[in-house]
Length: 361
Image 1: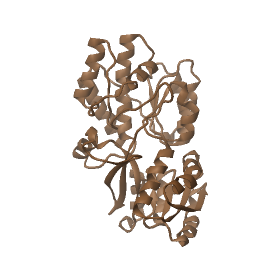
Image 2: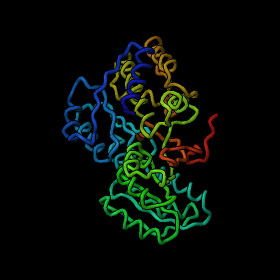
Image 3: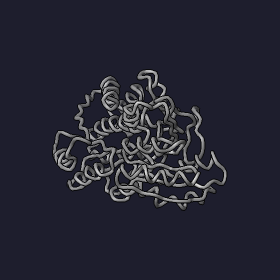
Image 4: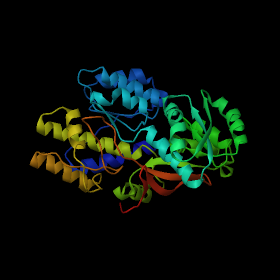
């Protein structure tokens, strides 16, 4: 399992670099009553921090239960919902490792603008807070990028996707697809050719569903997904070790574990709360990448326990560019232009909102 191997990697590096031994409890959010589980985790004093979730509704449930505590424990998430950021970001316990969906929508549309000059474009999006951000910003961002928005469609159930895409295909223009689950993504892939997908589509489960259809080699998709900054070295090491490119969320999970452990050590040394320790760690921006490695963790830990000062750290995702006094979301994300061919995901260029990223950045 992809999540478990990230936890194993983090546990190995942290235990070798520090005197901290992280212990994990792993729950599949799709097979749990998340509201009840979140309540139990929030009130379990043995749980130091929580990490999750993928789905907006589950992340909302987790954040809600954490927010009810007088002293909430840190909650790390790689969910990108703008609504969740707006609702919880100033409460001092939720830490998001990715830019919001607004930025993702801009980068995805910019890719279309780069591929096609002065083209019309259509959108199909899930009827959720995730999809709503793309809907709300579609007209403005397309116009700013020199594109013409032709039509917006939303759906509430996977069965609605095929007829909507049949209608959109008559427009003969690029289609932006914003699914909320791998099942929805797979259904969109089956009824489009060369459409542009948001990051949730690039999930191993999407490939698994398409493989079950028996004709995955006939399908194709492209789009963007958030990835580690290539200069952090995480992706190179991941590919060498596992023979795959990391999917969205894996680097963030690693960083959440690392930051929890370093914050735990910092809080013990300074007598501050755990959330304050997280804020202190994120208040300094490291000039160097690679802080997620065993050596990087060891240097940060030694500075905490020997010098009793706050280290400037970086993570598997790259730089941490938080503004904790204003909001608790990373202000910088790296995206990969990704496509599917022959039943696998491949990446080409790395981009940000500011343009392309080189591996030597």
